[in-house]
Image 1 (cartoon, rainbow, N blue to C red):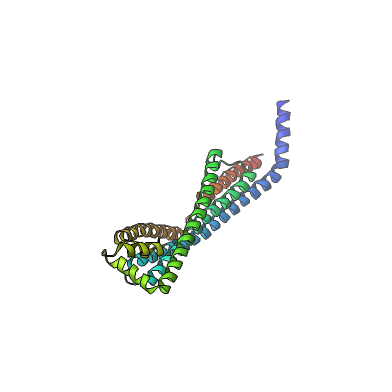
Image 2 (cartoon, one colour):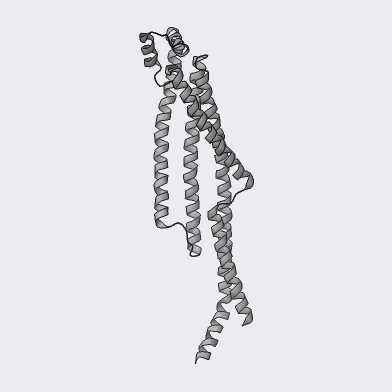
Amino acid sequence: GQVGHGLAGERTFLEKFHLLKCDLEVCISKLHALADHMDTTHETFTKTNVVVSSIAVVSGVMSILGLALCPATLGGSLVLSAAGNGLGLAAGATRALTGICKHLHNKKAQAQASSLVLIHGQGNGEAIGREALNALAVCKVLYQCRNGIKDIKKNINAFKTAKAHPRLAAAAKQFLTSDRVSAQSSRQVQRAFESTTLAMTKSARLLGAATAGLFLSVNLATLLKDWKQMKEGERTEAAKELRAQAQDLEEVLTELTQLYESL
């Protein structure tokens, strides 16, 4: 009886093998295709990050120049500060949104892969944590955009005020280059050019330049890292995982093929 059942099982396996082999080969091919797609997506986002990091570096340089040139050229300082703020705002928003888009692409690919084979991806708690971080990133971008636009408007309005009121501009220049200014002039400058480089004391400008310099060094390091990743063509961990799953299925297929040939 057991021999009969064994022979029946062998016949079923021999009859179904080619169909099973075809299904496994299709699954393996799709996993490799998904992994290649994730690598291509990763490369695209890395190139985007290189551009974004470059913009952030230029933004930092403009911000430092805006602070440094303030006593010498009031209008130029305001223009540089506004441009630096605008570029920094664009870079920060783009980097955050790029990270979110990359996560969503990877999540979609992993969902497709999980429908092919049972894979061990992110735990539920980790996935929820990632979604929460994405939500916080969006909120942060919106907050920074709102504040950044306000700062840019202040610099533009200050530029218009300085051009329209030469005496007020002269008072601002005296405020920037000398500590010996009247309290009235100081108040006028603060009211007219509030939150811009024209209303900053020397110590505040030095602190601002130091802070901008720190962010510039961070952005330079990020740029070098992104550039290195792009040049080396680094593969994503998620894509490596999919290829590992494909390799596991290839080993299963090899073992089944050997069993089929032995029968």
